[in-house]
Image (cartoon, rainbow over all chains, first blue to last red; front, side, top):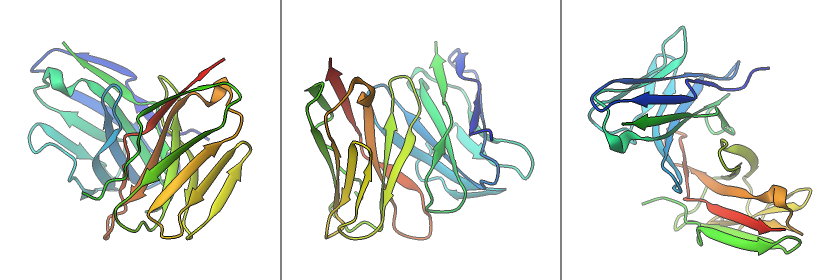
Length: 113
Length: 112
């Protein structure tokens, strides 16, 4: 009974490169959420997706960030032309239905050098 | 905004002491969820409270939802070093989208 799987666990990118973060939700879960966490800060909501649909992206920066959850395959959070300020832990969570508890993955720690 | 407030951000206790923290909102909440994140780990769901005045217990942890559904508390009896971590409360935003937004969390350290 695999939980939420995120990869990679650690990702190092140089400024200007692209970062792709992957998230496979728990089996039977069709709701996916992405959060960003800076050191000693809380979890900041980024985007909420269901299969093939973006439900709420109010927490996503308007530029350089995009997310998808295709019919087949994992959810992808994509950051283009990364800058140092993008360095953070990115957590994906999934739930069986709207409003039910979230199950978090181990996160991807992105470092931009 | 419609965030939940968790103050203070850090608390230090002696092992064996009790610990209480609060989560406050300026607006009525439909429900509240609590999560715990160990250092270097990921958030883990603890409990969800839905009814006004609801009290739920998990071993030494007691969770309460206020009568007005605007605040919630977490009480830990006789803290242990395994209680170390950051405790977040999360609220569901009003409207059709059920995204969960979190307070900044309270980081608990326990002196052995």
